[in-house]
Figure (cartoon, rainbow over the protein chains, first blue to last red):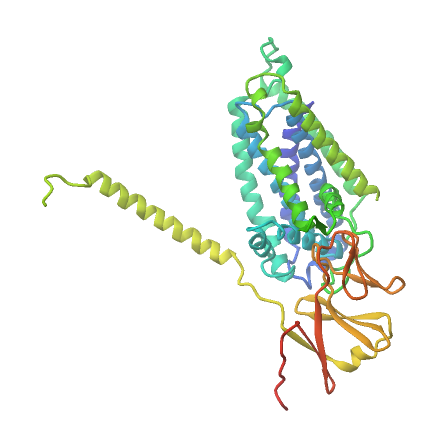
Length: 320
Length: 156
């Protein structure tokens, strides 16, 4: 089962490329036009409502599948030697997908997306040394404005797809090179060898069809809301929340008070989150036991902790 | 003193020249690309001029927004002709804040941060008080300025 999640992400990504291309024919990246152009896509174009919904749900399912893929690789220790580069490239792809989500979200130019991007880029500004540079680079100026919208549009439709395609090609090449990972418990045992084509491929395609069915059903039954147009001088709505995959960071930031022992709580929170992400990124390097083919219960516990924290904080954020 | 041998071989010399040339070329290219991609940063204004009658007549315990560059500014009638001009942006993660008249507090909905009626951070994650501006009234003009900035308007 876990072997198919990677292929499923690829399938969703290809669907996103196609539906995104169609939407880009009509979307206008301007603060006065963006929100209106989406309303027009949804209300005036043939099947416009469907393709917009399809692109939105495609993004949600891509990230969900990617997270399942990440945690399955983490828990099965599939990152261990000699597949470290697969983990590193996959991890970078996850970050790219998150950035895809954030940049695509701003294109709506509604009050939620405006506040979300302000918070996300503002949070980056709290990183010591490089924070302000990153913030200004992403925003294209000192605040979230027209410059940010057009910049995020460029990231979303040009920069990120190209980097993602190159990195995905590299990731797939490594999969070809190393073959699928075998769990530690089964290493050394004789396993039945099945050729990829047509046996595994057929299973892949069957799963893709089921996924397509789920995606089309969700897109048809639950089209996402467009919301109110962003007003740069208005307060965000009560109980505002980011997309579900950012909820764990959102909840974490809420936990930290303004000042901790005389230090800025925001800086400490952003630093701790960054360190936790860096630790996860470096797991293949840090987990020496798995690299030697031995059982590594300490890193299993850490992986379960990460998964639990993500799930609990997401749920708390969702229901609070 | 004359050395009977060369200090640099022809190969080392050519490799350094070529390698250095490539390094300089790529450094130049990436610096130029980077400088283009990085925005020429504007800055927030030092002061803004508003119509005094629009702001000085607001009811007590209420606020009226104004544009502080691209950001939210709030003109606040605290009580009995005590006014305050402040930046309506949370000091935590830069969300716009809102005034809750029933509680006499400013509130940031993004991470549930609270500020008292003087802009002091009192609850939740905001690390600093809100930025307070100076303001003066000159004729029919209300001049809101960053603290310490002296505004001299041209005489008509």
